[in-house]
Length: 240
Image: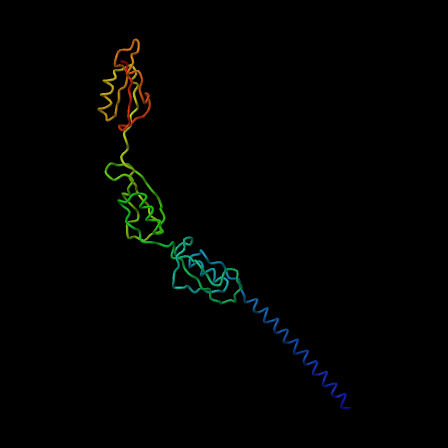
């Protein structure tokens, strides 16, 4: 066989071998990619789930959990539930990959200050400075405690909590009366009765009224029917 023919035949064999090798390599790459895709899973969202539930959810898709020993405070996630994860939800990950998670310790807590005896304004300012919320404010009236002062709190001072409830005394309820209609009565007698009950009474009058006896109430302020307290002033106009 001529040398040229042999060289040409060898070249064809080499080309065929190269083509077969390239085909095999391409097939291997495609097969590997398909196999890798078959092993990949989507990372589930574990945030907000209790640790036991999160562990089962991860195991169902072939993933495992690694719980970070340092818990993190979270205002929205309850204590004992997942507050953060890595990688994030929705990311493609291979099976058997470990998902790192952090557990919530609940809302951030602060040492509760002593509020009993303080005014409402001072107590509110103190709680605001300490970053504590006011859970509830209840009120009552009593002469036994200072007015507008905190008389009880929950939780107690030095406790650790995110919020505080307060009980405030609004002071003794002032006594009020319905102003009687005094027109036509004796001004002196009416004034004496009112003064014995703590009212401040002034009597005025400088002109006579025809047919009205002297000293009779002809006008009054406040008028009958209005509510008045001991500190209120009452004016009676009498005939001369």
